[in-house]
Image 1 (cartoon, one colour):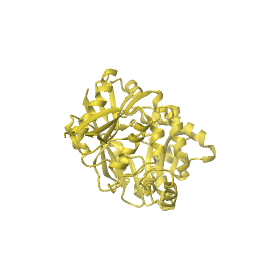
Image 2 (image 1 turned 135 degrees about the vertical axis):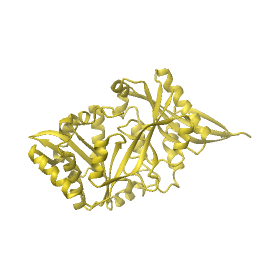
Image 3 (image 1 turned 90 degrees about the vertical axis):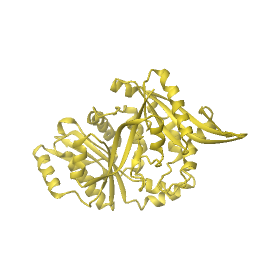
Image 4 (image 1 turned 120 degrees about the horizontal axis):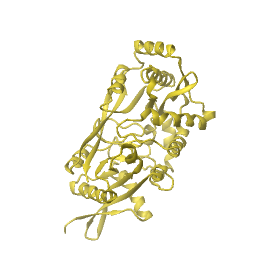
Length: 376
């Protein structure tokens, strides 16, 4: 009897549970895959709870293989129409995300065809991905750096995914570089020079005031979109999206890891680092909050890794030395708290200022993520 593969949209609650559950079954034997909390995935996918859907639409698909009366889920994908991206870049790019599949080209092709068929009638002419949901979220396929686990909020995908994607007609759109620290301190000469420049320009640093958390988030709103504008693929975040992200992050914030740069009292930039909670999530392979929360809390006490998630300055201060000072702040505070490793990025492959700056500060590239395009 011949196997057949059918792709169908997620409609019923049972289908959504299968969509969420599939990666846990698919990757359970991969020593580097980190299971997210299922409740977090469900909230992210929710059109009611995720403010991303105020300017976007998405359709979720499951691939199912039938052999006689037996049926088995063998893949999933989301097709994403991010109107905010199209408006920002004046293009007709649609996206795919939440892509997971068995190592079977026919299954991958069927998933991409289903996503394409949903995107094309919307007037879109290119499908890009993976982004789950946008470049403000996890994005890219891992093409280098398979031997180590991912840090928090970065994807980990199997070695065979790039081949499946490329054989389906996709070509490279852009590489995103991730860096790791290789020293226990920043080069003294660089820090000294940055401090001199900052003193000359009257730039000061301070950590977040958790008692004024909402007001501090308002300062981030003022700087965030200005600091990242003109970056390839960047989509400004709405106030609702920043509030949503801040609410999720607040319980795990280490105050010393969020630093503001100021010039005469005006906020000109900020940096955000987080403890690498993936260390703790790895101890909960089911992804369920009960009884997994006990394992997660216990493991969280032993985290010695961090990820520098965001660092940005408004344009007129990008050569002020404030970026090096903020890295130094996080490095110094983190080391005092017992952290011994940090990831920084991702950084666009064609952003020489940021890439060269990280190398000068003692970081080295250790993972590469890739975004792909295919004409619709």
